[in-house]
Image 1: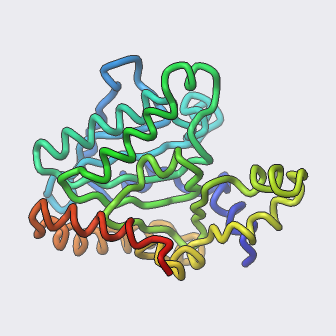
Image 2: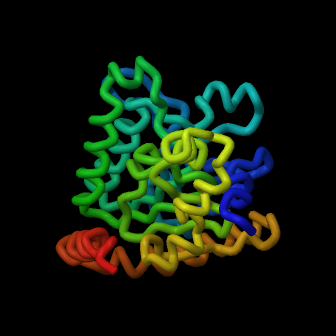
Image 3: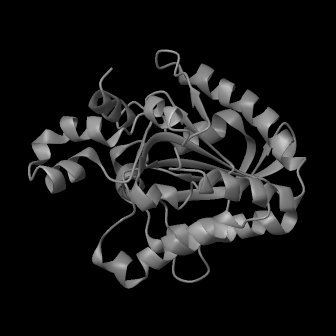
Length: 258
């Protein structure tokens, strides 16, 4: 499958959303709201849940299912208050010793005037900084699109996982084509150049695991994720805080060296 075909699969209307994964993998999800500064951003869902009876904080970029839901959730494009809400929940998890699982599915952070006025760039930058030094395990799962800083703001993690048709890139193929070729119609060509597929990213050592989608059988794929979460969180929770931070620092410091 060509890179742009995978982009289209990642954006597909039938593709499950973050809430679908949360409800399939975790139990007792209790959503928490607001950033304690401005508002509650419905593009970001987050709260408390359990994995095999153990507490975990789960945060996801939610695109929505129905047309009305998609509009209310801004198609998964978060405002700064969404990223501040996510960080609030991550710091809460750190305080109470809960691991964090984030689910990424966004074309990018919202770039409207209001978002810029309320500090979109700063909100993303603060998340990057704070996640790097968060003293609790973090696993990030790219479910569909992982676009630009809007995705990275929830993906500075001890492990980053993708599904086989997920994509993860600094910019959308259309955006790259507009800049590089002055023609957004060359998005397929740009997608090849961006090397944004799960296979490409794994070959560069930028992600840690790729999950099969079992021919769109996401019920089975989500069970694979659940099994891997059990193992990986057990391993990460067994590290002391200094070891956890050192390994995370080494992981990101090594990127681009080969």
